[in-house]
Amino acid sequence: MTPALPPAPFAPRAVDNDAAFALGRSLGLHPVTAQVLAARGIVDPDDARRFVRPGPEALRDPRLMEDMDRATEIVARTIADGRRIAVYGDYDVDGVCGTALLLRALRALGADAKAFIPHRVADGYGLRADQLRRLREEGCALVITVDNGTTRAAEIAEAEAEGLLVVVTDHHEATGDLPRCPLLNPKRPRGAYPFRGLAGCGVALKLALALAEKMGRLPQATFKALVPDLLALAAVGTVADVVPLLDENRALVSMGLRALAGSRHAGIQALLDVARCAGRPVRARDVGFKIGPRINAAGRIGSAEAALELLLCDDPPRAKTLADTLEAGNRERQRIEREHTEQALALAEREMAGDPPAFVLVREGWHPGVIGIVAARVAETYDRPAALVAIENGQGRGSARSFGATRLHEALDRCGAHLLSHGGHAKAAGFTLRAESFPAFREAFLAAVAAQGGEAAGPKPVDAELPIDAITGPLAAELDMLEPFGSGNEEPVFCAFDVRAAGEPRRLGQGDTQLVFYAATDRSSVRATAPMGLFPEEALEGRFDIAFLVRKREGPGEPVEIRIRELVPRKG
Image (cartoon, rainbow, N blue to C red; front, side):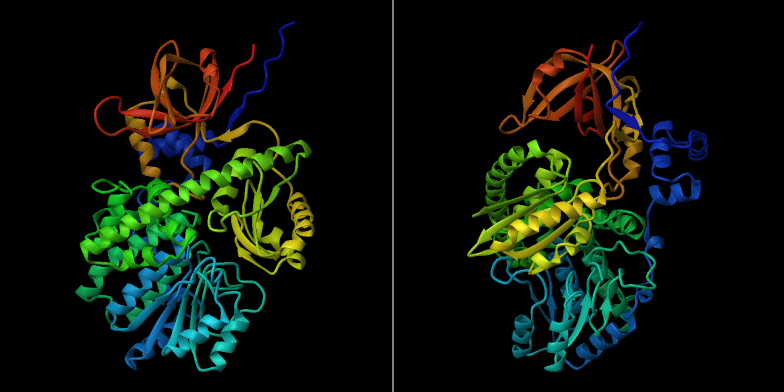
């Protein structure tokens, strides 16, 4: 009797093959590209055309957002009266980019405007009553928030009672008592805005455009010349905040990345230079891995002021100095992150024996500015959500990252009795607690995650099977039409079975971070790269199955390569 074969480690997502074939024939697409679109629910040719060619027609009218008329009326009147406006942002990439975007737009419209971004450690997260009071004492008549404020009804009411005007622009979950001031948030309950997925900078962009239109400045050459930079800033914040790159966000990011690459603004050019993205098209992954981290580093390990100043700076020598400051801060952030990641993974490994539904890890001395990144590393390594808590002086600052379908904001809502504050969304969230509350919080969080259910066991889903023989340069170029990739539109992952390595594997990159070899069949081969440590090198001595990305290569040599996501040795 022939022994049963072991189950395949990867499984292509189920699609309607007839619909995929018809889509490919209608648009002249490679069958693999058509299958990827069908796997994402895009089978109508008109929908597919809009998806691969997103443009300005996909951007919704800002006036559809509830309270937009109230908000623009207040801001326009404040500008006309010559009274000062403060833009109160957040210290992450979304908040910093949104603050820079709105400040540049307000100043172009004649406003006396300044920015305030809280210090992550000294001030903490979100809108605070004492800071609002300080801004009023400094002569500000109006505060416009960016990426915060939805859950701060009490603080806003107190500020309004003292004579301060407030307009909130935000995208976080709108639960509980909402502010009575104008609240621009696509997630408002029963709100009329047709797309809920905007990032904070996307909402700020809507206010900027609606305000320019109300003041009759939108068609004027000076403001029109500014719009590409506003789109560029919105694109960076949108990608970095990991909101869905679908619908309106897809068009916003697609146009914004083109504007980013072509910007003549000194600050943006200096940022692209230090991120090694200048002089070529900028992709969403460049924002996620190069541009965003450099902006984020400033706010994570200190003050975000240098990042904000850079995005506002149009003096080349000063911009270079600021960009170099961000680069140094990013290197320091990387050092701290590596140290904390080693510690967190060691703690997680000890807990794996109990097979927990999530990890809740705590340590004194962890830097609160990087534990969110470390939590993501733990979640990715062990395929389950992770919450990390940094303890200092009896207080804990926590950051959580999701895995699979776990909804973090709902899990934290169920832990509210043990927390001082919490906020965020399904994929990423933050919280604070007293050190003595940690054990009770840990038990409550684990129970809340378990109650949501976990990922089903079985083969890991991929977009399609793609034999090594079928990987070509033209296919890689066609897959580029599905950009920008990110949350909700992840880069397609393919699988191939019964593969071997050809040639001698080589190590590349500073510190030998990459392993390069040729993935081969009896008929063809393709250049393959993998992060060192993803699998034991001896696995390349036998046959294996792989999950991978397809990438077009620039310059001389092979036109295409694959990036290995997972390698599983074949048994038997």
